[in-house]
Length: 67
Image 1 (cartoon, rainbow, N blue to C red):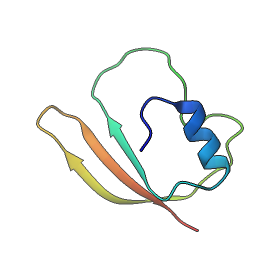
Image 2: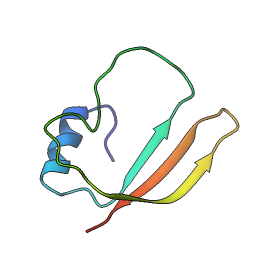
Image 3: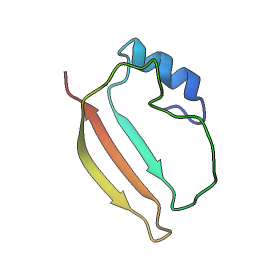
Image 4: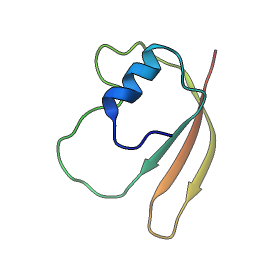
């Protein structure tokens, strides 16, 4: 599990070392930020396997890479 290190996650993606993606989506607009799936990252096909919604509006999306 990695919190807050976009650079580390991008490196792990390039090395194909991620078995599962769990993305937390917060219903807040903050402005600019780093892109998790930015330029220089090969396209990855992901399959949505689970969603969980909380009363706060946060949604957790679970994806598995299709290999």
